[in-house]
Image (cartoon, rainbow, N blue to C red; front, top):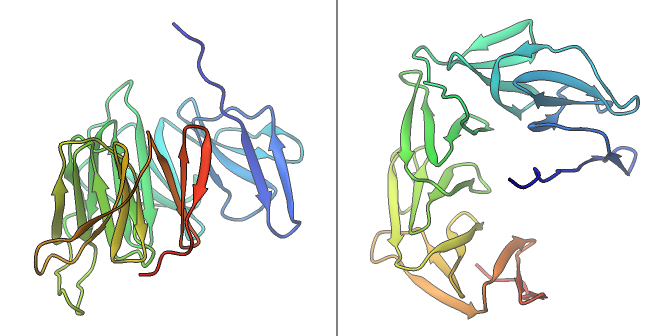
Length: 260
């Protein structure tokens, strides 16, 4: 059995324009502290703790028996071992339980929480669920699921596995094509394996398919258009600032700004 790969953490303090290397910090998850830049919130060994950046030390556990944490709008969300999701402005004090029906939490299983505005998603190993606020419980979106990403406007969620891509509209869309909240669009199924995937604006997806890089629209009023952009050997793609970056055979390439 190989040794566990060590993950190193850095904190960027925007106000002070400095980067702090948290050399001694070990964590299963780490998120920003909702009230101070002098600390971070850490999940370690199923305990939520505060970590003092300057003093490089943990404070006493705030909540125990926790499987996953997330932060949104200065509030902390966490999934406990009993299967309940809690939202807290002050951990251990002002907490609100969100779900009525507990989610079955399994031992030796990896959990991830995604929270953004009124969206709450949960990934359990390779299974992806979304929280339904109407009945206060989770519904399964895709199994197996490889990844998921919110659009820039937070109104759409793309989720995918090695061969399929889906998009869910998170609220009613009045512009064309009109969509109801929670309506799903099946983009395509591919025989080749999907690797990286990113949103380009709120209407297109860029992804790598084996050695090919493609763009797909999400407008399904007619046949969904999928265009091949380029071909590289085993590409790793990154999309930022309207530019596509491609890492292939130890070389890094970038495009000019891609027009919508």
